[in-house]
Image 1 (cartoon, each protein chain N blue to C red):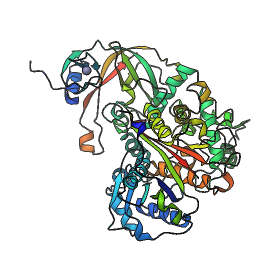
Image 2 (cartoon, protein in one colour):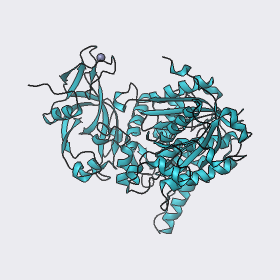
Image 3 (cartoon, chains in turn purple, yellow):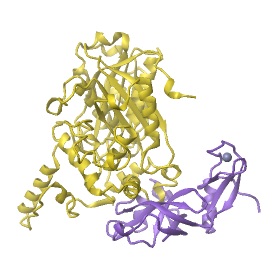
Image 4 (cartoon, rainbow over the protein chains, first blue to last red):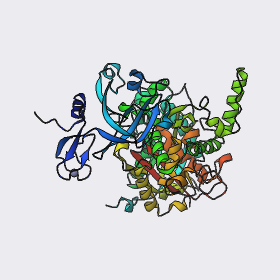
Length: 144
Length: 424
Ligand SMILES: [Zn+2]
C-alpha cells in the first residue's frame, strides 16, 4: 500500500477506517497528533505513520448548549447539549474531541481524569456555505 | 536569540485616543464606527493636528468578511475619514487585531519610515443571528481540530476553567466575582455596552418579573442572583452568561507620533515604552491549560524593553473575554501567583479600582463590551485617559498612574500582545 502523505486529509481518511493515526518524527522520535509535516521539537520533516491504541484520559472539558453550525445540524442545542474536551492519549499527545457517554445533564459529575476510548462520529463539515457544510465527514471522538 | 533585548529604533508616543460608544449599533457600519472613534480621538489631541500629516493607517478588524460580507476594511476606513490616498491596511489577529495594528504602526514609526500614523480597530458583530456569530467567533479557533469537533469560544475558555478548578481548587464563585468587579467599574463608563453593576442588573430583573405578574425572585445578594440558572444560564459549562463578555459593536483609535515631535501635540504624551508579542499553539498542543504561554512571553518582552517589573505597573487593562481569562491574565503578567491567589484577587478587592492593582477599571471586555477587532485599541484609550487624569468618575485616585499596561489576547491565546505605557 502506498503511504499516505502527512496531511489532514490523510488523518481524515484513516478516521473513516476507524484508525487514529499520528505522525512520528524519524529524527527525534516525537509523536504528533494530529499528524504534522514538520516536527515542532527538532524541526525535521521526515515522519512515519503510527497507529494509536485510542486509549486516553480526559484533561479538560466543557458542556455546550449553543454550538457551531455542524453541531446544531447534528441535533445538538440547549435541550440536547454535548460534551467536548481535551484528551491526552496514552502515547502522550493531546487532542480535542467530542466526549461521548458522559452525563451532560450534570456537568459537575464529569471528572477530569476519566479514562476514555476512541470512537468515531459522522457530522457535516465546517463551512459558512451550505453546499460545502452538508458534506459528511468522520470525526474523532472519545467515549467514557 | 533573546527577543526581549530588542529596542525600538526611536521612541513613540500616543497623543490622541478615542472610541465610539460600545453597544448594539444596528444602524451603523464598521467604517462609520471607525469614523466615530476618529472624531472622538481628534477632540482629544490638546494642541490639534493637521489631518494631512497622518502618513498611514493600520486598522484591526477580525471578521467583517463574516459579519458584514466586507473585506478591505483598512481602505474603507481611510476613505471615510478622508485619508485616501494614504496607505492603509487591515490587520486580522482575532481578538488581538487592533493591538497588533497598534504595534505595527508603532514599529513603522520606530523604523523612521513615518512620523505620524493612525492606528486602531473596528468591529460590527450584532448583525448575524447568534448561531452564526458563534460560528464566526469560532473561526478564530483552529476550525479543523477545535471548532469542528464542537469547541466554541466560551467552550475553549470553559475547558481552561475546568483545568484551573482541577489544579487549584478555583470555584465558579471566584470567577463570578471577577464579573461583579468589572461591572462595578463599567457602571461608571458612559461608553460601556452595559454600564450597570450586577446589583442593578439583578434589581432590574426582579422588577421585570414583578411587572409580568410572576413570582418575584428574592435574591439576598449578587452571588445568589448569579447562581440562579433561570437568570444566569450556562453557556458552556462552567461558563455562565455573566462569565462571558457581550457581543458588541464598536471602534477605537489612537494617534501615534515619533517621540521627538510629541510635545507639538500635547504637553502630556503617553509614551509606549515596552511592546511584546508572541504566538501560541492550539489548546491541545500546549504544555499548560491553566495559563496562556504566549501572554507570558509577550509580557517578558514588554517588561524587559520597558525596564520595569510587574510591581511598577499602577493599573492594567487585561483581556477578560471570560472571567477565567482575567484570572489567568493577572498571573501571566506576574501581578499575582498562578492559582488560587489569582483566582481570589477580585473577591478580595485586590484588583478593584481602589485596590492594590486596579484591573479593568474601564469595565473590561466583560462590561464595556468586546468588539473583537477594536478591543486592544479601546484598552489603550482607557489607559490614555487614566494616565492623564481624564477618566471622570472612574478615575483611579488611590495612586498616580505613571506606568500602565495592556494585555490583549488573540483567540484563546494563539496571539498575545502586551504593551507598557509611561507618562513622564
Ligand atoms: Zn523531531
